[in-house]
Length: 509
Image (tube, rainbow, N blue to C red; front, side, top):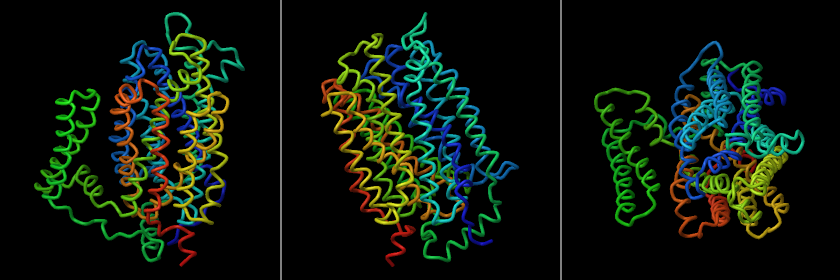
């Protein structure tokens, strides 16, 4: 069996089912953490920096977990042990998070919760590349999009459902500033997260390392195999040192600008992260010089050896996730202030608006679930990259439209547009990427690819607070418009991507 066998619809369903729980947890986090922060006393311009935990955690965790899972083989398999461990940790964090008694505790719990979710999530991306032949990968990632959409619908709308269908109090009770609707939503989320991941763990059997090697060798013989011109290329000590110098100096320049021009202190974090990358490259150079080829050296070598397609997608991802992060962190303050006309976090009107944000997040996820199975059909007709271009441009206009719709109910239209973009974001970049990667480094490169999701989030977390305060006059709605413009730019940058593994492109040949 040198070629990966095609899997049935239900086999793909089972291997993707765990994402239902993962996104349930993420949806609760995205729709409610800003609300928890504000309830614990955070100002609107402080929210982005409090959210810095999520992207920084992903930046660190995902490449490490990807690298480790590439080299793992246990009785449970290659990726499934990480699904399970992450799910147990994330479920525990979901029970603890809404009981945070102070802002600093909530911020710390966000670090733990996001790290746990990342441990489960990262191997799921590589799982599709492991298990499915090239022609089924678009369907595989679209199936993940479907479960992400369904999980997010229920997770995002859960406080609203509990308040309006089950009469759970939507205002703080007793000494805790967190409403019971939010607390019970997180408890239910912890249960669903673990249960959904267990379905995938116990219904899907992974291929052995020997089978995986045979599959990769067969794909290299075809036009659809990855271009391995860069893979395994030796990276010199001087290359590590020079790259490290670039990053370190860039970080120092940013720090100097903040200091001498009196910019917002949060921007120091961006400079610090760049300088940290420089230090990591310097350390890698030292290990390389002493012939210590450890995991750090291997990951940083793979980063410098990334394929052309991955570099092109990285730019698209940067502008895409800058837009998404703007939406996630500013939807609650933007809609409660711009559409509901209140900044009072203890008022019934504010909590009504915050609950509506949860419904809207659920709505775009529901639209994404609906669109998920249309994307493979569209991709076969106009190509994956054109499908992604159209989806991002539509989503960008959806975000911009939130400024022009004064009636909160009309924001459902905006979310329909965002839903199309979200479905494509969760499927098309990964479908285009997997065909460009070697099997033995699938997890590592999926983790490295997360850099280009995380870095724009870190940028957003460090500069959007300052932009909202000084450029947008404290009006969060303009941060949403900024995000929409960024998503439209990402759409047109998709035209630069080389996708030689695309079924549409192969048919044209």
